[in-house]
Amino acid sequence: MKSLITTGDGSAKLVEVADPVAGPGELLVAPIAAGICGTDLEIISGHGDPAFVKYPASLGHEWAGKVIGYGAGVSEPAIGSRVVVTGIIPCQECFECKNGDTNRCLIYDEIGFTRPGAAAYLITVPARLAHVVGDSVSDESAVLAEPTAVVTQAFMKADPKAGSKILIIGDGSIALISATMAKTYKPKLIHMLGLKAGQNEIAKAAGVDLFLTEATAEKYDLIIEAAGAPTRISAAIGQLVRGGTLLLLGYPGHQKTAALVIDDVINGDLNIIGSFGSSLAAWEKTVAMFNSGELDLGYLVTHKFKLSDFSEAITALESAPAPRGKIALIIN
Ligand SMILES: [Zn+2]
Ligand SMILES: [Zn+2]
Image 1 (cartoon, rainbow, N blue to C red):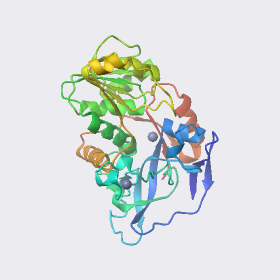
Image 2 (tube, rainbow, N blue to C red; image 1 turned 180 degrees about the vertical axis):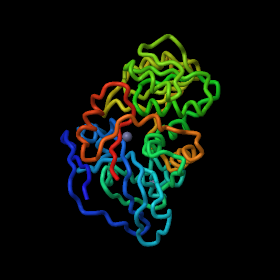
Image 3 (cartoon, rainbow, N blue to C red; image 1 turned 90 degrees about the vertical axis):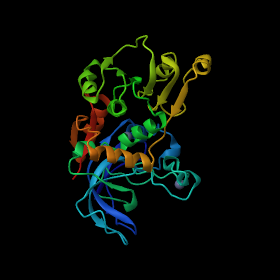
Image 4 (cartoon, helix red, strand yellow; image 1 turned 60 degrees about the vertical axis):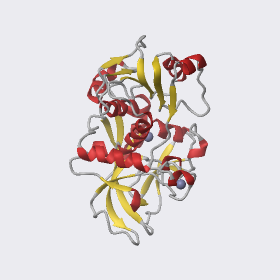
């Protein structure tokens, strides 16, 4: 079969590799589609945090697939079931896993980072980590399970209060998913500070009340930084009400720094929260929200390419004009 592989030298190639075989406790899954994101660009360029990638890396950490076979000891979910799979594989034995913080498993192992990804015609995954997606959920929503679980994880930590004023900085997929997620917490308002005016319509579809392209003097209870812009992070501190929360989701690149007015943080009684990846609990919550209809992200996939046209997909990710949501590779 073919798999999209990079050595971190700035390029990716569709390479012929041996078909994976489901081992004990594993499922054999045919990916339906895989989304690509800025993190894939970092893996391809070699500019991501080296602690979290194993080269040569097989891409595809955002995906949904269909079960087509079982390894020893596995008999469900049924063949043909659509599944999404917890990306960070918890060892279930370390201190973090035992406390439910499987996103921080001490033996870091993640689909599309340290183990083969789903930008390939086949993948094997631990059956215990597969979540069945209901018939009412579109493929477009299902393929967004991984970035959504990342957002769910962060929101579980930030826990916005009903009636909050929320600002989201950035207008990419994580920012847009954050808006749709924020809506489920019944906020007073959701503003988005984007870069491209052309994202206005898709931001509205995501649940944003007001799309801005320039900062205002308004104060917020929760600011979600999803652009990875150090200057925006510094400015956001000054835009929080006392007791407010800054949630950092945008990754500015390895070892980037941002200036901080410490008085504002202390006297403002502020919370600054980082959030890494997604735990098993975040995946369970995400899939439950999809399956109940509480969360529908069907609006977000705006660009589709065949896996064989991956280089056009990467070009679109780097430079397609707004409006732009998630870019997905259609596989099987
Ligand atoms: Zn991603
Ligand atoms: Zn662990």
